[in-house]
Structure formats: structure tokens, C-alpha cells
Image (cartoon, rainbow over all chains, first blue to last red; front, top):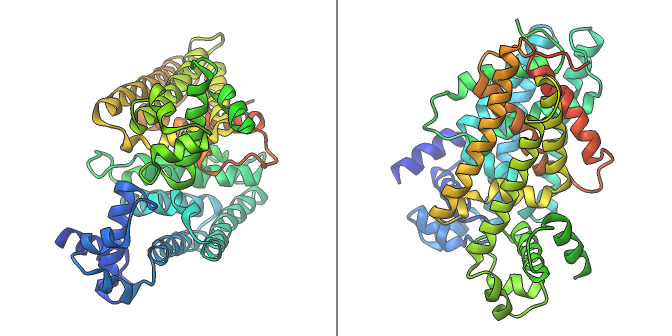
Length: 206
Length: 206
């Protein structure tokens, strides 16, 4: 339980109360181990050391808990992207920050990032639409920055949509293979990936 | 059933008899819809229009069917990579072919590729080790080609392992987002990605 509590505080500092955070961490653990569909609300409440009734106080269903994990994950990613895109510097400097922090987020929070990326399809339709809208905004921000860089002569790109998608795709796939015991830290990986991303966009990383 | 049969013939032309292929396609469909853990052998045999007994003639368990999908997927990918790496041309030409065909494979077979990439952890330990060994060989081939390109002065790369992993990662993530109805064909996507990959490796795609 202490490990779950620490993880929950790190992942969702803004979710209140702490019990809801603990249930989300327990859900994450169950979804990661056995997948969303094979997980019951009883599994989640047991993993959180609570009764099923206590779960329903915070989440009306298993789907509502999944939605909260996926929605808040996307909102955190959108905030990371927004901060980078609207920050200081030319498009290359801002793209470096975007690639660094986007990659770092996916490595550091790989368990959440996996659910965020791969369990989307399990969401009820209305929830799914909310998340797809957040995704579109994330992709739009990345495209706008690439387009701005092309206009400024900093990037040279054949297809802006394809290149921006590749930038994000590279960071998202980190969630699939990254593990805590790896010798490259999330921050160091972010720096490596920023170099690769700038090169993909035809900019000199140096 | 006809759709499943066609898909099965396309995906596993070498698997005999056709009934085994049909069961693999049915398993794929169930795993994609509800995840491996929530799928029963009864779900799979029903999706294939067979009895559970008929399933056990070909696969002793659900895990054995998953293993066959994941193992044969990895062997197909290894063959794609091998063909590119040992083909004609300088390291850049061979890397172009690797990126093109690796990406095309993941786009064209995105349903299989998802199970291959994301359901690994569900395999029993011995099966998992077989697949991890195939993965290592795929990664090794990519690393060797990058290293050869660096030695030949065609590529300029800071960290060979990180760069080769990024090359494969970009292609694997295609399985997550690619859908059949997209306007970019698997082949066209492969060509776009080959340009991006060569740039990541510091080679001029032109």
C-alpha cells in the first residue's frame, strides 16, 4: 500500500481526496497486470485495501475509473506540450523542449502512459470522444509548431502531419518498452530523443 | 467467417492446416476486442465457428494460441529485417529498405502487430523467453546495420543502441494508430518513414 500511495501522489497530485488517487493507482496496477476487461471492481478495491462499497463512493464504475486515468493522463500531456510550444525561443528550441518533456513524461510514467495509449478503445463512446478531442489538440499543437518552424526556415519537412505524428509516436512508444531499472534515466532519454526529433525535422541539433 | 479466412491466409500462409489459421485469426479478433485475459477458449472457438474440442485439436491452450501468433509475428519481422540488412546497396540503401518494409509490415498487419507488441507480458515464462530472444535478434540486426553505416561514414550517430531502438520504435508504434481506412497506404507510409529514419541517422535521404 505505501508504494501505491506514493505512486498515486506522484501521478495525480491534483486528484482529491487521497482515497480516489489510491483507487486509481490500484486500477492502474490491475489493468497493467491483466488488462482492463479482465479486471473487476472487486480486484481494484482489494488492491487498494478497501471494500467495493468504498470504490463506488468515488467512481460509479470501472469505466469511470479508467476514464479518469486516461483523461487526466491526456490533460497532463497536453499541459506538457502547451508549455513547450508557448515557451521562449525559436521553433527548434521549443521543439527540443517538447520532445524532451514529452519523452520524459512517457518514460517516467510508463505504467500510466501504457493505459493512456493502449486502453483507449475500452472507453464508453462519450468518454472516448472527450479523449479523442484532447488527442486532437495535442496533435494540433505539435503540427502548428512544425509548421511555424517550416515557415521560419528552421525545419524542412515534406509532410507536416506525418512528421508531427512521428515526433509524438516516438515518445509514446517509450511507454511500451521503458522500465524503471533501465540505465538511461527518463531525462537522459528525453535529451537523446530531442536530438533525433530535430534531425527528423531537418534541423541541426547542435 | 470468409473475412476471417482471408485474413488468416494473408497473415499465416505457412501455418497448416487452414483450420489452425482460422483459429489464430479468431483469437486475434477476440484479443483485440477484449484483451487476452478476458478471452476464453470458448470465445475463440465460437468466433471461428467451431467447437471448443476442435480448438484443442490444434492448440492445447489459449496461451499456446497466443504464443503461435506472437512467435510467428516475430519470425516474420525478423525475416523482413534480415532481407533488408543482407540485401544489396550501401548501409543507407539497406536502412531505407528496412524502415520501409518494417513500417509497411506494421501498418498492413496492424491487428497482429498490436498483439505481437502489447500482449508479450501475457505469455508463459518459457514462451516469453523464446520471443525475447527473437526480439534481441531483430534489435541486433538493426544495431549492426547502424554501426556499419557509422563505420562507413554514411551515418552519424551519438548512441548506436538508442538510435537503432528509435528506428524500430517508430515503426512498431504504427500498429497502435494505423487503421485500414487511412488515406496513406502502408507502402506510402513506409516511404515517408524511411526518409525520417535516414535523417535521424544523420544521412541525407535524397
